[in-house]
Length: 166
Image 1 (cartoon, one colour):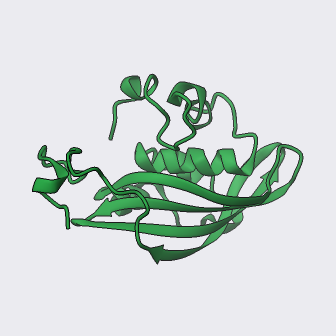
Image 2 (cartoon, one colour; image 1 turned 120 degrees about the vertical axis):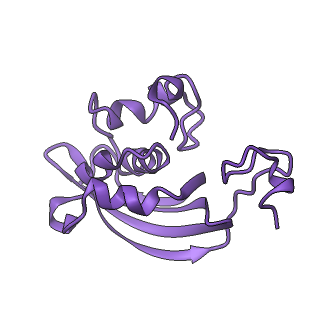
Image 3 (cartoon, one colour; image 1 turned 180 degrees about the vertical axis):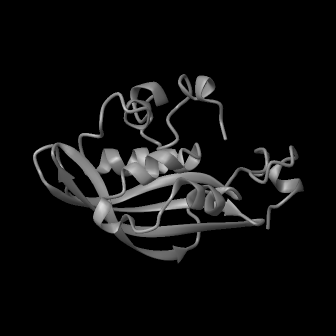
């Protein structure tokens, strides 16, 4: 996990091209809720990257949250390195809508393997705040590939080509 002070000046993990402080940080820190379904989806992806599991629970709609806890999410995501987010399309979910969908792919590195998940996520806005409802998920090949000379996402400190590259 990146340190919060370092992430503020770095590009946001969601891939928007903005600095984290100008993009997902205000939503994750509670300063300003996400104003669209896509903004919430991007901030949730960033929360996965930064292991901010409390935010993931808070932004999951109470009707679909079930037994989800920050601790359960921490256990599930501890071994995952998120590599990239690709927004494919959106339907509704604007600042004036009450429902929306975001179709995306998120790529990751886990247990020595590159992978991706494609999801159609559904969102609902209540009392001016967006919530994640649920999503249809499928496993897919990763679109994002670390460069051969990039640091290996497994954290070994070696180059990708000398470590986990296929």
